[in-house]
Every structure is written in C-alpha cells, then in structure tokens.
Image 1 (cartoon, helix red, strand yellow):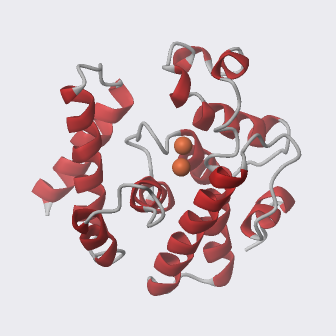
Image 2: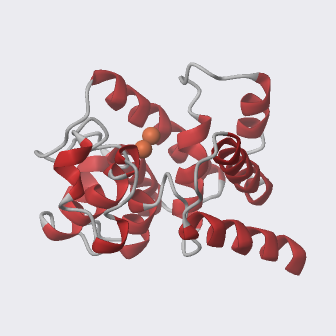
Length: 196
Ligand SMILES: [Fe+2]
Ligand SMILES: [Fe+2]
C-alpha cells in the first residue's frame, strides 16, 4: 500500500506544519497511536495498514489546541454550528484534504468524526473512536475503561457500542443535544448487533 507522504509522516509521529497541539495533546495522540498499532497488529493487518491506523491517531487532535473561533470559518457548512470543542476534527480532515492533498476518505472520515461518530465510520474510524476514549493516560482511567481496553480488538463491536453509549449518556445527562451523525452511528451499531 502506497501511503500519501503526509500520512506516512504522521505514522512516524511527525505533525503537519499547521498543527496546533501542545505537549500534552501530542502525548495523548502518541498513546492513542500505540493502542491503534497494537490493535491493528493483533488483527493481522499488513504493515501499510498498520501505518494508516497510527496516522489516524497522530492526526485526530492535530488542531485540538487551536482557538475554536479560528476554526469555525473553515468547517464544512453543515458543521459550522458545532460547539467549539467539536470543530477540530472536521477542520483537521478538511486541511488534510485541501492543504496536504490526502484523498484517503476512510482516514479523513475517521479524523473528522472521531468525537461525534458517524454511520459511515469503517474499521479504522471505529477503532479510533474507541482508542481516543480508552487512552490509558486519561485522568479518568477506571476499571471499566481498562476492561473495555482489554477486550479490544476482538470484542470491538461491543466495545465501540459501549463507548458510544457512554458518550451519548453523558450528553443526555448534561442536557446537551445530540448530533444526527451521532444518533445515526448508534442506530447502525445496534442494527448490526440485531442483524447478527
Ligand atoms: Fe479530539
Ligand atoms: Fe483525542
């Protein structure tokens, strides 16, 4: 598999010149990359694919420390009204496409929707969604999160659903609205379980 140079660089832990991510954020991305690499290897993916999974991890929060108001104008029109902390994924994906010329749609979707979730997320995107939440370096790393981590990647269907359920519950308890992408992601996951 031939990786785009910006993707190959990200897999090595090198960030684009326009990255706005501080030390702590970069350390988080490196831990997520280690989780993603471990899962990809356990699944027996070939080395180019393992690099792609690492790159997704190293790119997902590349704009997380940028001021949201600076990102808003760059967000796709349908996502421009998102809460500030949710803009970094969609704008990072857009810059990867438009500034770097990355055309790997699965990887771009994984980055864009790592916080919201999206019904189109494939293996890479779903794993990134879980890995971001299950980073062992998070201040909240309780027994429940550790047990979910231990079940990856074999039980990924159940684990991804558990992570999404937790995120949705958190939003409901905080009286926050749900994005249609998030609800559609939930519906797809539940239908997959029902469908066997
Ligand atoms: Fe993020
Ligand atoms: Fe993250």
